[in-house]
Structure formats: structure tokens, C-alpha cells
Length: 553
Figure 1 (cartoon, rainbow, N blue to C red):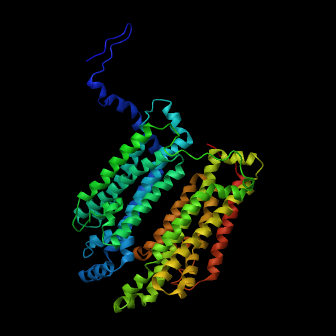
Figure 2 (figure 1 turned 60 degrees about the vertical axis):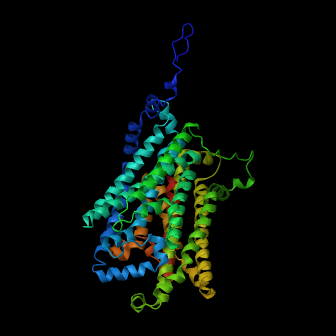
Figure 3 (figure 1 turned 60 degrees about the horizontal axis):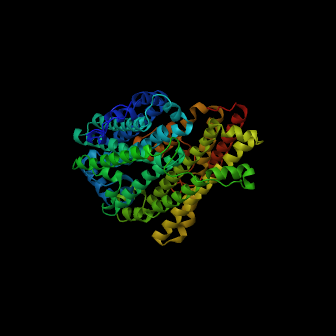
């Protein structure tokens, strides 16, 4: 049926066909997607390469180190018996499946790093290519040309999903190169890939919901942490709760065990639903807008904001509050299982001989907890110091300096608040771990000892702050190399014994400069020297940023 045309107007069909999806409209909405993907590749080829190659290298090196450790059936049986009775290890590594095989042990030792790593890659890259591009104004500029309205979202999703697939394929190739069975190796690679695709889609939704890239990335990273925590609690408690976590779905594939492919359909279904939601949300908001409108500020600023440290705290308060709560929870979760580590060893003569008794392995466990909490604080500190560069390139710093604030006050105030926040976060993690351990064991006498041990990595965090400030001050183009330092500190702390790293490589991590308390006696000289190095690097970074020109984009 057609409507009669009016005089001078073309005939317009209003029949059933007008209600069907128009392929031409979809093509128009995604016009320029391929060109935008090439632009992202051109700009971020090094960043993408570091993420993908880094994930493959860390996972592959860890897998390679496992191969010679559990060579015969007796050693594998002893390993399986130990891990099956270790809630702490299951919470960190996942379900203990096929531990009587070399492939199962390899997956158990590496899957947490691979799955969390690919998820974080998906989060940060997806938000960067969506909300980050809108914040800088590049999306609006490109859409003024021939770029379709859905091209930015489509390009970001396809590019990061492809990066996840490449990471999964690389991990599978590394496992195949070690001579592990092909079925399990390919399944584990697919597990890594679909996990990255799922969090890519979830990050697309977060980018539509919030108006700032930092907030969107924080929300998406929080989803990664929540998924890992739900999976950890579920695996320790019987496995039911793990089915409410995307990471739990991926690990349910059980490579080298049952080799189940069907659980991998669940992350893909989640990804499809999230992409559909992101597509719809992208169509109902303006460029630069968001589903959650930013709160309007007061008509007049408080007088306290005239103070640079107060301004810096105001800028960081939301992140500090969120990180403080997270550190307390992380410390409590890790500290509460210290008694279970002792019970795992107590009564086992062979393990007591290896570890030096139940008390010794508890000390080693809390030394690892201190390292993990310190690395988390180091990540917060590095990202916060790097915000100075963001304030500079956005032009906001120039406005502040024109108002009469000196560079030294601006930089010094920001770094002082960052250092104080890092110290506060360390204390939050220490309180959580010490109190949880005291409640779990009923022994309050160990509370001060555990609390003080959690504070030891603070000197290494000071080095991270100083080195980041030095990169921002003297070499802003390579400032993101700071994340290589943090990643290497994690590799050294987590995989040193497994990889057999040489001494000079271990010493590249600032966390190796201080004692691994409470497992090692406290060396105050090394601790104070490490703190002094961090302070000297910070002072140098301030001097470098004061001397060079500001670089606004």
C-alpha cells in the first residue's frame, strides 16, 4: 500500500518494507570503521604490541618454567594433593582441575595472570578508543567528516576483540610449542580470547554510561575485580557462585581435563548482549554525553580550594575513597586465609621440612600478601602521578598557572597528596590483613607484627612515585614505560622462583630492594635508602617539569 503523492513531491512508500531494518542505514552508521581502525593501529601499534606480546611472554615463560618442575607422576600427585587442600591457592588460581597432568598444572599456575591480564587490556584499550577519544574532541572532529555515528564504537569493539583473539592464539601457540596436548592448548587459548571479548563488550557499556574516561575505566576495572572475587569465593565454596562470573565461565572449560567447549558460549552471549546495549545507548546520547549525567558543581568554590594540596585532594578524592575501600577488602580477604595456610602444612612432615614449619610458610604467605598490596598501591600511585601529564596536555594546567600558581606549588602539591594517599592506602590494606588474620586465628598478639610487615613495601612505592614523576618531568613521551616497571615488579615477585631469574633481573624491581617481611628480617638501612632514592627521583621530576615547556594538545 502506498500513500498518494502530493503535488510536486516524490511518491513515498509506507508499506511493510519501511519497518524492516535498512542495511543501507547500518552501513551508513558504521561508515569509516575500517579507516578508524587503521588510525588506531597507526597511533597505538606499540601500545597494542606491548599488551599482546607481554601477555603471551609472561604466560609462556611461566608455562615453560612449570614443565621441568613436576616431571614424574609422584610429584604431580603430591602437587595435586597439596593444591586440593589449599583454599588460598584455589582462590588465587582457580579450580584445581587435571592437576595430575602437566597441562593441568600449567593452566593452574598461569590462568589467573592470563585471564585478568587480557581483561585489563580489554578495559583500558576499549575505554581509550571510545570515551577517551570523545574527551579529547577527536571523535567530534572525525564525525564532522564522513565517519558514521556508530563507527567509533564499532571500531573500538572490533579492534580490541581482535587483540584478545591474537593474545589467545599466542598463548595457545606457546603451549603447543612446549609440547602440551593440542586439544587443551587450543581450548586454553580460546578461553583467554573469549574472556577478553566479554570484557571488551562490558567496557563499551561502561564507556556509554559515564562521562569521563577515568571513571569509565575504573568502573570496568571494578567489574574485572568483582568477577575475579566472585569466582574466587565460588571456587573455594563449592563452585556454584563461580557460574555468576565471566571469569568463572572461562575457567569452566577445564583445559587438559574434560576439555569442555560449551562454557565458552556464555562469555560470547554476554558479549553479544552487552554490544547490543552499548549500540542502543550510543544512539540515544550526544557526543560527549553519557547515560549518567555529571553532577553540577556549586556556584562558588570553597575558599579551601585556593590551597593547591586541597585542590589536588579534591581532584583525587573519589579515586582515593574507592581505592581505600578496595584495599581494606583486599587485605581482609587475603589476611583471613593465613590460618588455612598454616593448617595445610601442619602435620605434613615433608612440607614442614621444605618450608621450615607451619609458622615459616605463614610468614612467606604474608610476605606475598604485602607484595601484592604494595603492587596495587604502586599502580594507584603511578596512574595518579601520570594525571599530571593529562592536566598538562588538556590545557587545564596552563589555566591554573596563569591564575598565579607557580609550577613548583602545582607539582609539589599534587605529588604530596599522591604520596599521602599511597601511605593511607597501604595502611588500609595493612589494617584489613592484620585484623582479618587476628579474627581468623583468635591470636591478637600477631596483629602488630602483620600490620608492620604490610607497611614495608611503602619504600618501593616511593620509588615508583619518583620514577613516574621523573618520566613526566624529563621524558613525557615515554611516560607509560612506568607500567613496564610495575609489571616487571609483579613478574619478579610472583614468578621469580618459578622462572629462575638472574640476580640482576630481580634487582630491576624496586620491591626487591626491601626485605620481604615478615619472612625476612627487617633491614632498615636498605629500607631508608630505597625511600631516599624515591624522594630524590621525585625532586628531580619536579625540577624537570619546572624547566621544560608545557605541551598542550
